[in-house]
Amino acid sequence: MFEDRSYKRTFYSAPQSVESLVAAFLEPGLIVLCFLSVNAWFGEPVLRSTLTLCLLVFALTFPGRNRFAEHPASAIIDVLSSWAVLLIILALCGYATNSLGYFDDKVLLWWACLTPVAQAVAVEIGRRIRRWHGARPATRRSAVIIGAGPLGAKVAHALRDSQAVEFLGFFDDRSENRLHPENTGELRGTLGEVSDFVRAKGVREVYITLPLGSQPRIVQLLENIQGTTASLFFVPDVFGISIIQGRLQDINGVPVVGICETPFTGTNELVKRISDVVISSLILLLISPILLFVAVGVKLSSPGPVIFKQRRNGLDGEEIVVYKFRSMRALDNGSAVKQATKGDPRVTPFGAFIRRTSLDELPQFINVLQGRMSIVGPRPHAVAHNEEYRKLIKAYMVRHKVKPGITGWAQVNGLRGETDTIEKMQARVEYDLEYLRNWSLALDLQIIVRTVRLVVFDRHAY
Figure: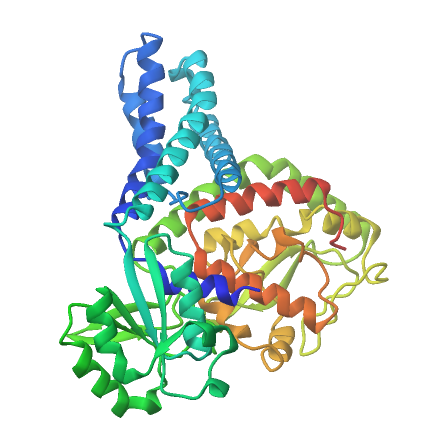
């Protein structure tokens, strides 16, 4: 379910393209421009508080998300959800710093209403320009694939999904019964005929998907094709494993291909940590009365400590201590930990309430401030469960390439609560890996918004 989409993202996302560069500045620039325009419309002066808000908004939204390739409905939903979360964050910052009075209410209201409209219009304009540009004959690049096996079929699907590429067919020396069934109808010839075809058709790109065991044939093929002007790409057959943040890197002049890497390096790591500290601090400040209420309720519900400390695996699999409000009479934390089930006799009546409403998870915001967890990330499982599932589920421990989260992509997609079958845990892991492949600050904000809705309406946790 996830492999093909992650393959397209890894394979045909040109790093720092003009389109992605425009998208990076478009969203934050448009939000700031809307604010300044509304501010000028109402005749308000540009004060230091105005510039501070503009800088804060730009920092929180940069880089903007590239929505030009998304379906219009999906793009609009993403714009609205991201904007709503940003407004909530700004409102919390204004409340915590007592700075809301620096701005005119009419300016803020009109800005809140007009900005998502302007963003939606800009995305639609960008989407049409992208489609027009991709349909121009001068910008379409013709391409062929060397190797008509399963990997060639994956590359062909990725090329067909790109509006800027015209796929012309496959070349392979093998008999048809050794080729992928989807590819036989588009076979254009053998490897010896590639060079002539490339020259005759003016092919711009050639993708080589032959296995490494075909090295002598690849070398001969390269010698032939290098007599043309076509660009050459070698596609390694590494997609039998889960690719996380695949990228080409340079180590002192030696090119290496990163296959499984955390998305939180460099500026991404800084953005993630700053957003965690700011949001968790504001949330803890606002929910402090709720924390006191729950603590008293836990203490009165049954004998035992208020906070349950459980051993979990964190970043890079290192063991951490995670805080929760105690919801059970028993404190399972050993080598065998039984998951809570519906009607579990270990759960106290008050514990059932705080588990159903996710109030038991609130102390984990302290874990976020400590740096052990993140607000959004794969949910941490008990150490005993990790030892069990790492042997049963492929790439299970890859989810520990990032800090565990209070909420995650799996939880907002229906996998909240008990995972009583290996299939449910497999699905949860797949969503966690999908999060690692596609992380962005906008995705984190979207997950936070959807989590709030789930806490209010969902009743699957117990």
